[in-house]
Image (cartoon, rainbow, N blue to C red; front, side, top):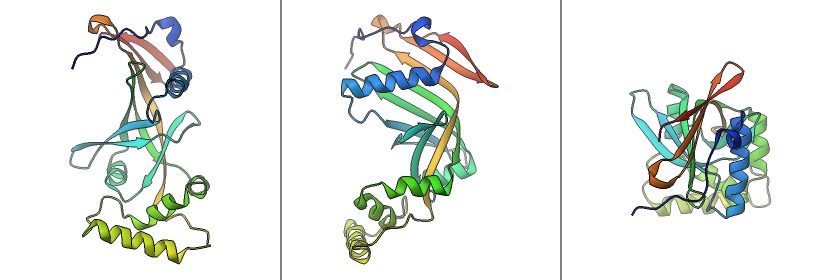
Length: 206
């Protein structure tokens, strides 16, 4: 169960001074390497009682230097963010022996932006957003499938509107850490912390 990390190194020179540029570079390399779903990221939230929760969501863009994803606003994650918008993200790319940890604040994007994205989603995904009241208890799998079929017939040949309780969030990063696996578990960890309008870079002990 132990792997020897020898793929690459991360120096201050290669990290540069802009973590968002480095993220874009690493993300492009993850796609080129053929990582399975390179835009899959762990999203950690904390509810109003202090209970943390984590799940995988998909990054849909780095827009205005913020990490964007979409979900049902009434879901567990949506309710957590409404109570406490401090969140954490994590990308893990095993082929490249890399991960990126991000801390920041999540805010809803505009209704217009959410509608624009919803309009280009696959039709099945659009119907699924209406069929699923995310995180709520359902009586059975058959209940969901029957609802999906019913909505498919109802909207046959019609444009499907975005649900009112569905849309996007943008995570404005306050801290970004890049991790590169190294031999002997002496991993490279370079962290960037936002100080007002600039970034402070530090090397961390593995």
